[in-house]
Image (cartoon, rainbow, N blue to C red; front, side, top):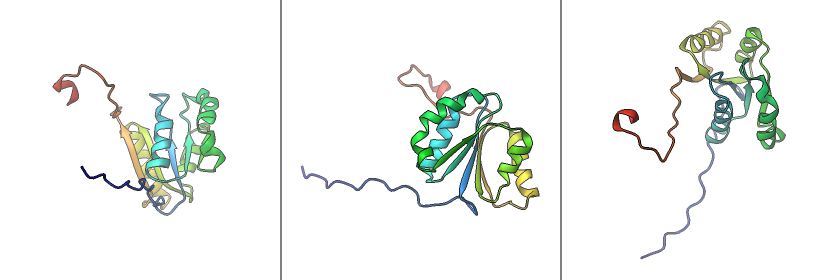
Length: 150
């Protein structure tokens, strides 16, 4: 057999959020770990700096998240803020430096964020969302039936 030459490592995406410099992640209320997963996804898969706004039910996550995310925070790639209410969330969503918003929540929340962006004259800001707890996680190994995997 011929040896295959080593392949260069994959390069991060070289894209910036539309018309802004930061992706705002609105932390989930239903799972403690989703905010970190969302932050890492936006940073590592999409090469975007991220501001994580913690969910109002999860302010206690701030100390451990600051430790976990410390290397990214030290490089000014990630910042974390506590929830200060709907006015703060709306101000963050419509801030000129925010080019993308990611949220986990209800369809009503996604619709409200989109409406807020549109009212602020920022219809070009992208939104990604996980709605209705469609969490894409499988635990393996597992004895899953075909029906469960559908």
